[in-house]
Structures are given as C-alpha cells and as structure tokens.
Image (cartoon, rainbow, N blue to C red; front, side):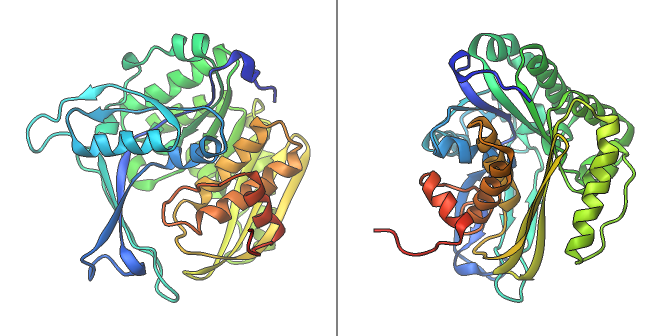
Length: 359
C-alpha cells in the first residue's frame, strides 16, 4: 500500500461522520439512578482520528450541523480543541420535532456490573449527509488527503449517507488516497435494507486498501463465509479470523491490510486485550494481555486510530499492531471515548507495560 506524500496533501486523515453527544453518569454509576452526568462530543469516526490529531497530524472532519444549535456549537468547539478542521452544511432544525444531533446515553459499568448503552438517534441530522454538499474534487484533488477512514455506521445511516460514503471512496481512489473501511455491522441499521447496503458495502470494500472488522462483520456485510470463532477460546478466535481473511482476500484483492481486536471481559474494569493484523502475506498477532479499564467504550476505535497513525508514519507493519493495541488500551483509561495521547512515548510505555511515574 502506497500513500500520497504529506508534502502534496493538506491532510493526513479525513473522516466523514455524524457528530453527537455522549452523556455519562459520574462516578461509574448506572444511568437510571444518577442525577449528575458528564457530556462530551462524540462519534466513532472522530474517535479514530483523535490519535492522529493529538499526535500532531492534520485531520479533517466532514459532517453536518443543526443551524443555531448550542449542541452544534459545543461539538464545533470540541473538534477545534482536538486540533481538527471540520466542514459541513448547517441544516435548519425545522419545528421542535425536527433535526438534532444524536444522543448516546451510557454508563461505564463497574466490577461485576457491565456497561449499558442507549442510543437515541431520532431526528439525527447526520442522516442528511449528502454528496452534493461537498466539493470532493477540491477536498481530494486540491487539498489532498493521505488516508480517508470510512465507517459502516455512517454508510448505513440512510440512503443519502450510503451514497455519500460510496462517492467519497470513488473520489479517494481517483486521487490516490488510501481508503480504510471499518465495516461496523449494526443489525438495526440494516433491517429491511439488506440488499441495498450489501451493494454499497461491496462497492466500498472493492476499492479499500484497509479492511477492519470481526468475523460477523465480514459475513453479514460482505457475505463472506468463514469458520466460526469459538466463544471465549482466544486461539479459536485467532484461527477463525485468519480463515475468514483468507476467504476475503479472494473476493477483495485490492485490500492489503486486514485487522480486528480481541477482547475477553473478566470484569467491567479488567479485560484481556489483543489484536490480529494481516499485511500482505504476513500475520501479526498480539496475544491478549490484561489491561485495566476505566471505560471500555472507544477502545476499538482507539486501536484503529493508532494503527492508521503508524501506517501514516511509515513504520514497519509489526509496529502498526503494537501501536494500535496500545492506543486502544489508552482509550479505555480515559473518561472520553477517544484516546488523547500526550506523545508517542506515552503510547510506547503502555505497549511495554511501563506504568511507572514519569517526572
């Protein structure tokens, strides 16, 4: 996989997304018996891009906002604070039952009590993302992008967003931008739209350079048959993923990088965390290691963000999975659902298992 040089690109990474807010009870409490909450701006795709933006690479977000909304202002300020450029139309709210930014209501869980997440996406303005609102020739041709990261969550939001992601993939391919595609299957998004979405996902995957997802994602999004991974048996999961990817390679030969994470939950605050990555004909595996977890949400996005950062830095593939594993682990130690690395050294210290104080 060859990237465009940063000298010819204004942005290292671009992500299309639907922004919203996440509200979380303080002190690890459940939602239903809490009176105090923390609110943060969020989306899976900006979670991925945060690793690169905090480590100094230029990132751009394509999204859409509710005009005049204080939540939209909150989101814009947050993106600016994460060192991200953003672009997108301002959509009129309409009446009080019109458009708004999505709400993600979640507790972090604690000990033997697992996290619970409730998504409230009624009237979500991100479902209006439309290719006509963006000049893709300017973005990819004149500004230039090294990697565009696409998510199945956005591709499946609505017929408009599916076409939007497909046109982004086509423009990226036209201008030599590498395409990362995280399949992110969600049954509720696909209900009644299976054939439509299979066509869109197939088209995007056909031009992608990096494909990310677990065995269920590849089977349900792309129709690739493969061996079942065995429950909590990590060795079976690893072999199941390898078997699946060998099948995927025959249908999607443009991609050269495939990745997924491995997670075994011991308690809400203790996980076994691992990863698998295929690059060309080589396999790289991080056997699951125990990590402490403050909030698990965003760990997978943190892994993808770190992996893409390592690719952008042109490191050897063995470091792609190591850095991704560590940025995923980092994200689970922070109350935001995106990792905010201070520097590369902090990430490598996590990989090395060095949690000693640094003065």
